[in-house]
Image 1: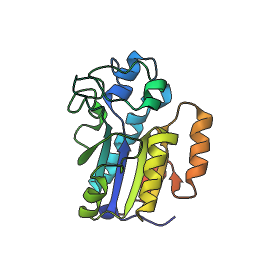
Image 2: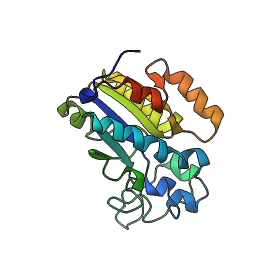
Image 3: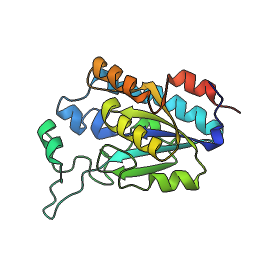
Length: 202
């Protein structure tokens, strides 16, 4: 595979947030955090560090639940059905739960707040990446068949060269993870974190 120019490459980290992954967060409280998801920050942070050391860019998406007039989170019906444990304060804008996990401290150049699967939908991510001179994006995070897949497809539609980091993302089951990766090969290079780092030029 060809070498990537790190100065025109961005890592997009999808939803590695405290409310999804950290002890005491919303998903931990609801018993919805998988061991595979908990392992991701330790794998993704070194990739971000390697890319930044070569002049690349790191962006993160932060899933956000906005409050209604009574302060209650506005949760989409499908998500309410899947995650009935979500309550007031979870993923609230500017909260500790909404924030990136601690492993990413000092590594993220720009975070965008999102309300749906894709990090591009109704956010300023594309604007930021264009201004940063980005042509290549690598995507990691959760969920492989949700936020990662939607972000990868949206990036492809916007004519970025897309890579998906196979061991840098996770799904509820290994079978769902592998099926999503197989499907994403139509729009992206599917690489390990190590292989992606090895493709970065100096």
